[in-house]
Image (tube, rainbow, N blue to C red; front, side, top):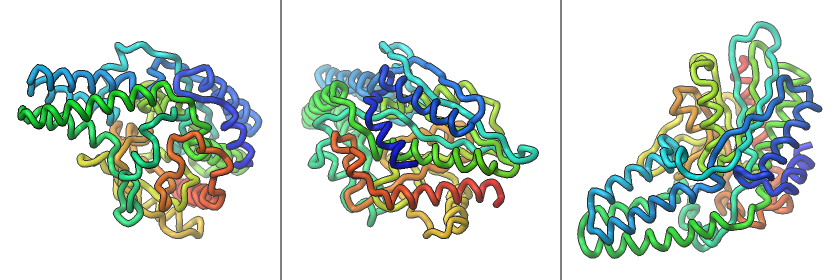
Length: 371
């Protein structure tokens, strides 16, 4: 049952690249074996336990640029930070100290000759708490998100600060340096914070994929192989998804593949992302969003709300790789609920939202399979 799975996952402190993440992966693997999934395996990789491990050097470089009055250093740092935050090029990940992350991967064979490949994705690690996630500090990102159709970027303040330093003016250097110094303190606190239970983000996604796995194991999708992918280290910067894509580069046919990500399903009403990051948005394909609408029709539910997200999720890396992808989540008047907080517990889960998201996800999968 979805509720039981969420409660079991929340009992594990599954921080990115920690022993807890490994324990979570082993628990998921056991569930998949009981469901009857094929080729259940764990895949280890090296990655940082926190996004702050790579972003703090950028903040420090920005403060140094302000002190040295170096516009070149500020601009270079801004470009590097944008690449880091988006997951496009995390060069520091190759040189910074790292822990061991763990992915879980399994397969469900098609009914009949396989002609399509569905990849169901739900990260299983949980974030760390910290002052930066206090409701008073994140409220601006979620304010009127339902009305505006977007969630503002959490990377906007440091990006603007680096841009201010790059102006070369005294006021720009002073203001930008101060914002980056404050950002460093908040990021350092988040890196040391306690691991949250992560009921909504993202035990709900894991439980939903497990529920779908049970249904598709009992009734395989016609002509559609299914990969069940539970990446680790999403909260630290999408490390597990990047590792899986690197291992499968060239093996997936963009013309016959769909990556369907499930993340944070208990906040309100289902929605699908039209794009990620602001102000420069990377867009999901219109035809894939149309498939989400078709899935809603198959499931007998309303068409999912559209949303632009000022952050990054695992499926955006599939978009970079040229693969069709959909990221489905939920949002309510308070945004994503107790986001990255210690009260993200099963007691706070909106079970009606989880059920609606699960029905939509199954509808999308069946629509992709031609049902």
